[in-house]
Amino acid sequence: SIVPAQGGMYYSVQVGSFIAESNAQALKAELEQRVVGVHLVKALIGGEAYYRVRVGQFASRAEAQRAAERLASLGYRVLIMGPEDRP
Image (cartoon, rainbow, N blue to C red; front, side, top):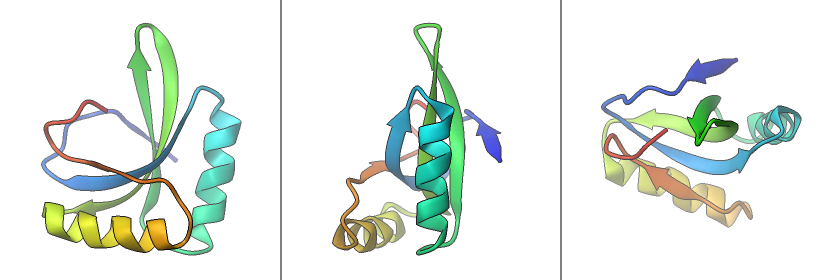
């Protein structure tokens, strides 16, 4: 499911950002075979929709960092997203 792009007070790990929702869904399905807490965030940037694949809703940056390191060790490019970051 796609969650609306809202600022929550948590950290997550972004693993991909796509214009094509099908690409985001494919990465989400792949990640769900390996980790829990995978979700899509739809963000409108300059009038264009982006579908972002993220993992987790962590209370601290340190928790997100541990998850990011695990995902990176599996070969994914990661970006930690915090409450201050745009969707």
